[in-house]
Structure formats: structure tokens, C-alpha cells
Length: 294
Image (cartoon, rainbow, N blue to C red; front, side, top):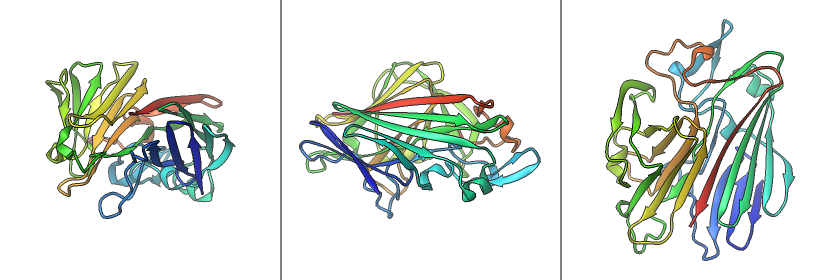
């Protein structure tokens, strides 16, 4: 089932499966969200939970038991329940079912709330630990945006990314298996917009360490057009920037992450995972980002 949010500026469609945004159009009927063409990438804007990225061997160890967990976790393929819905707000809820329990032994509630306000869509993600023990998780988002937005007068290479605040950030590399490597270096020149090209993604996603910021914005805009998007996240450790390569696709994902993939040297124990979040019994975790469509 698809849920619709709308106001005088935007019309937003969100699937109950994955609580995933599938369409955002403005009053000119301009579509911002990637269409999930399976020949390129079959998703629109998945929610990432309870891991971000990939685990070594797609598995983790929790108290002596090995659990399988595939890239970005199970939330993106799970059916959420709608617990509240108005013209400009919807609240989705995910709780463990028998299938989830095979891969993740913790009792939890994951609420994903979308609120439409003018040209802004805010996304609030609330994790509640319902277990008697501490739970471990990461969370993030993976929205894909059509680039170019106006293909009749723009090309992919007309776009660039502006990062706010504008200083140098550490750039984290991935190996061929999607694990982080020890090749971490400072990326110079980020005080200027970063040009977008297909070759930019020749070594997989660009992952920026933004952990020093309380608020970070990645803005995608065109030198030939007036439309674009700006994704602002709060207190997240990382932003991912990704498109397919060598296949050339007309989208770019701008991904706020509270967590990251395993590294080449990960122990496999989820308690030791880099930047894993730990919630004690009865505690909550709150993550927030907003998308401005212009």
C-alpha cells in the first residue's frame, strides 16, 4: 500500500514496504525521486536498519551465536504498519516478526515519521529497545534522486555537490567487497562544490566522515537549472554519496548514516563493530534528517 502526503508545494508517496519514499513531485509535476529501474538500481530511498553497509561474510556474532545479516539490513524489505496518517504526516512502525527474529535476536520498535512542511520533508527515525538486554544496531537512509532533473536541458555532469559547513572531511574508502579499508585520507578542495560525474563513483561510494558536525548539509544543484535537493542530517557520523559504475545511471544517492560497514579487520562480534549504537533496556535512539526540494 502507498501512503500519500501533500500540500500546495509537493506530493509525496511512501510505500508501507520499507517505509520507503517512492515519489516526490512538485506543482510543476517534476519528479525528484529515482524510479527504481531494476536495470540500474531497483530501489528508491530505503531505510537502513539494523546495519549500514555490509558485514564481513554477511554475518555477526552475538553471545556465541552467528546470525546472517545482508547489506543494509532487513528494514528495507519489511512491511511497516501505519500508526498515524494525516495530509502532511505519517508514522510507520516496524516490530520483530518470526523472519526478523532469525536474523536479529532483539526486541525493538522502529518508528519512521515523515512530516511535510512547505518544500521540506523531515524524516524522524526512533529506535526503542523493548528487550531485557542491551541491543546493538546502526541506522541510516539511502534516498536516490534523479539526476538530471530536467534532461531536456541538463546533463549528469552539470550537477555538483555543496557540503555545508565547507571544510575538509576525511574520505573513507571501500574495498571490492564493500568493507571499509585503512585507506583513509583528507579530501582537499571541499570548500568548493564537488563536481558530479559518473567516474566519481568508479571506486564505489564516497563516504565522508562528518562526525565533528552537529548538522551537515549535502546540496545537489545544477549550473544550468534551478531545481535540486538538499539533505540535512543531525549528529550523524557519515554521509554517503553513490551512483552505479561502470554502468551509468541517472541518479545520485545522498545518504545520512549513523553507522558504517565492517572494516577489513572487524572481529565479527556486533558489540565491537565500529560506530555501532548500543541501547540499554528501555532506552531510545533518535535520528533525524530533512530533504529540501527546490
